[in-house]
Length: 58
Image (cartoon, rainbow, N blue to C red; front, side):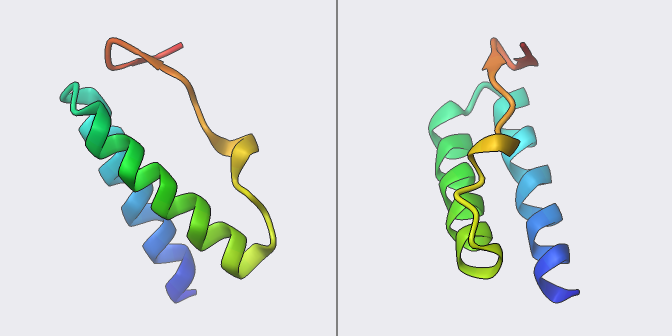
């Protein structure tokens, strides 16, 4: 349950950075998400990444 909360927090942070055009910060958080997902779920998280163009979902 704690992991799920952390994943949601990081996802929200990643989207906020992308919305503010802070793509380097968004990428760092994305990498943290992928590491956390891999550690706890055995997934690289690649299927859950949403591409962004100018702060909007593609």
